[in-house]
Image (tube, rainbow over the protein chains, first blue to last red):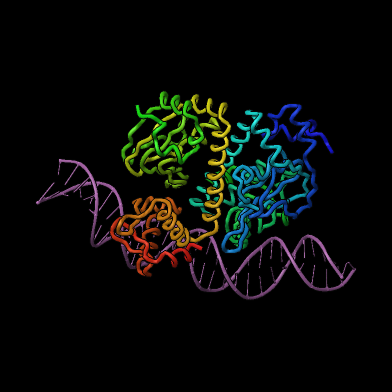
Length: 226
Length: 226
DNA sequence: TTTAAAGTATGACAAATATCATATTTTAAT
DNA sequence: ATTAAAATATGATATTTGTCATACTTTAAA
């Protein structure tokens, strides 16, 4: 069992407010998991009894829509916490979490987190701020979905992916999503997504090499995204 | 200055967790406002220094999109709190709040709320749960925007308006929105919204009488909304 | 290594939605 | 009560997006 005290990703989440003592206690009751790419961490409708701290790897949070398509609501990266919302609301999750890469996560049981809430006001405020940030993003995202065209949303998403998940040495997006997943992020049909990628490619804003995507004219792409 | 202790709407918000003492303190430092229909409570980008408790009347939370249209992100009714997110995040608001009816609201300064956070864990948990609820709604709403057709969203919205804001004795939606506002809720052009309302009218699912809308076949409408 | 399956790409077409024009009705100001 | 402005309604048309068909390419399993 590894020590939470020495875990780097802790610095990036609400957990940074925990004291040495609290970290020791947490290390004692946490469970570490390795999750393979494509595996499910939890599924829409499940009741979670704690939260997951993402140590390594990226996962997608999805919701199955009435027409059978998976909408990707959010991507979660190392340092972030998973499942806070449903734990706090004491409701089943409204989203599924699926690994996009091999992952390492730690599960911290609800009882423990609740004790932190009671003892450590700093921690509570951090969690609250994180959720408020998520809410702001969700609202903004909603407005994009409602008011922007598919092409604008695609441009926006490509820039988001580069800014938040970086690029390889040769300038391609580090996080490789399938066309279907990319379509699921921008909320469109897979074919439409593919077609618009081709269009951006022909217009010289991006370059395509199989699954690999490289942004070649960031300014034009950003202007397109509004 | 009216007493918070005796205010009925308190029961419906996080404020229900406050003690008699805390309520007395709050009554002392709060400011009551009367806001006329159409007036702005706060505007996107403003920094708020507290939260508003809605005592009477409904308001819309909107965000101006890049194409110049106002998207209605959320409606807020009596008993709910306004501006919590931005106060907690310590960021300017991302949404404007505009009265849809004459309103009565009380402003409670941030310093006071922060004391409650520190003293009263129950209150903190209530606020957290409220924000988590908002987050869930925002996610669900986002998926609707991304995956449903305009007609489905219109049907969904009409049902939402009836369920959450009630109907008059003659069965019409109590909350009267302009076509433009309704379009702003479902994220479409005003003309498209009007056209689809006519279509639902002709199909016998609703009845139109000027601004007044009456749902006549709830089941069909609900099936349409998915 | 071969082969089936999955993923990517593109055309043809249909459906949904936006935009522009214009008429009608309602609302509010004088 | 009259009138201008705003809101509602509807047609014509353009644009966007989805769907279905099919071909090509990559991936992974046998």
